[in-house]
Length: 116
Length: 115
Image (cartoon, rainbow over all chains, first blue to last red; front, top):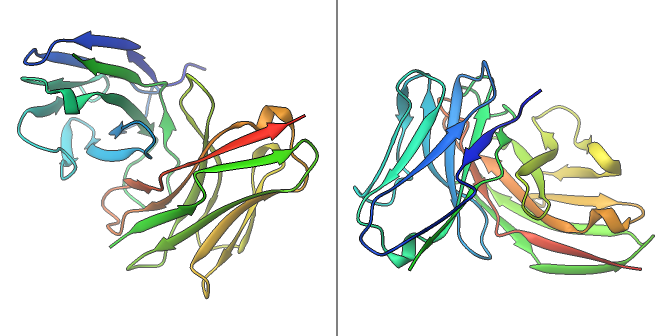
């Protein structure tokens, strides 16, 4: 079956611009996560959705970052006034259920964001 | 607080040799631990996970890991490396709250397999 998909695969933008990154989770997965992976680092948690609501947004670095999941499926990560330090690979993952600490997360291939 | 340390950012082995990738964790609650593999231009794929059952966990592709509470370790091993094992490997611990399954990752270890 289809896995987690993310679009675009690559995004190049200029400092100060607005970008949107999209994630399509596995059908039926209620939990959705966003992570950010900087060069040479492991993924860092950004935000977690259970259904339509953001249950944990403690990883968002500042108020330029925002994410939505209006119908409980597709999610969009939005970054305003991009900065060069935002350059990274943004990973999306979904899980059959988010609650509980042992659930397997299935990751998408990521969106590589480059801010010039 | 939860954290993971992976010792060795790069590990190089010969084909057929033992693979050992080290992971130590810190956790304020009984830990759930994961190993993921990332091939170039692909998403992370779960190799195995420890969820407080057997301390020796077997995963896909011949990998296994042993949970050692006394050493706060969860090292990944494979008896005989294949060329196809060359990838980046991440150890992760689940967050302390049961209300979210967020993962805290180590910095990763790049495995190189030489012919």
